[in-house]
Length: 91
Image (cartoon, rainbow, N blue to C red; front, top):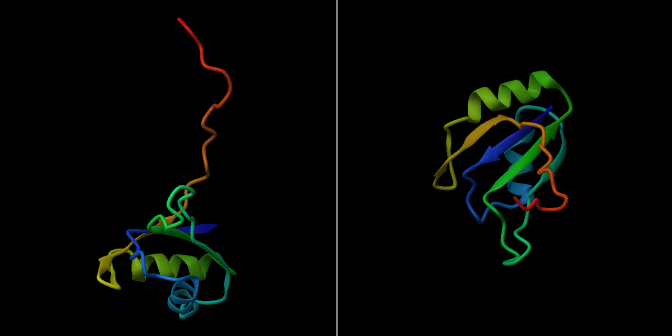
């Protein structure tokens, strides 16, 4: 399972996020998506932890918590849906 963290401060770093989530258990991976055009962080991140129990505890404690001046949105990440891509249809 992967955790989605939304409404992040643009000043948050991978180390900041890792530090917060390590309080709940081993953090396997932190992903901070970057906007291709601006090179800035996009305001959300994904965290993968070593166990579902650790992830569930982090979600329960951190969803709605204020951190770096922002109220976090923390929940289970939804699988990425394909955008369909391909050629456009003309009608």
